[in-house]
Image 1 (spheres, rainbow, N blue to C red):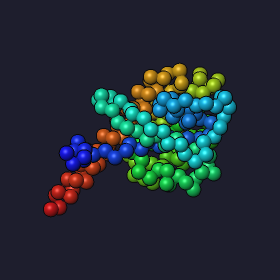
Image 2: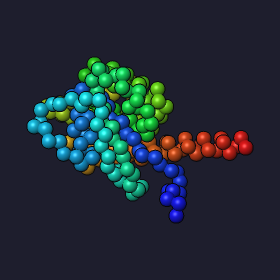
Image 3: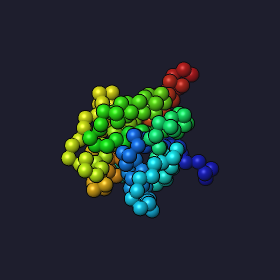
Image 4: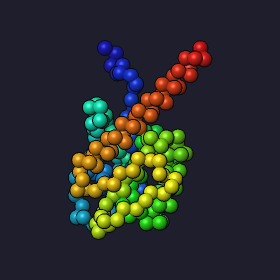
Length: 193
């Protein structure tokens, strides 16, 4: 054996970027998905830059995929790093508080433009997770019009398995879209010859 994985399509590491406004629960969701423990006292500690968590995700078709989850700090002070963080992503998960205050809605739109639109991610490779945090569990806001075609899931730490299932569906959809783009590119190359 040559040591090369001959399974089509070849899948480099599946990079999934998680970003959203500060205090929206990105790291809590990321830790849960990666089965990582957070040793903090429950106090808020903003992510400085990015944390990369690696784990396996069982897709709906029963295949397991290795995921690199890039838990990105949502502070606008990190904006100069965002192009580097977005590069090579297979999927984008925007996380917001479930009630989506007006300032967060605008921030989500800007993040979508910076992370998805500028880096060629299709709508099927992106999702919005509306995180029910604290006392905001009753009211769920409406996603901004620009994001209305994205898969939107209302999540909470209490809905553990549903959160994991929603995330794996996003990864599955993103990989299917990426695989289709690769096939189209390969077919174009073959048709030129």
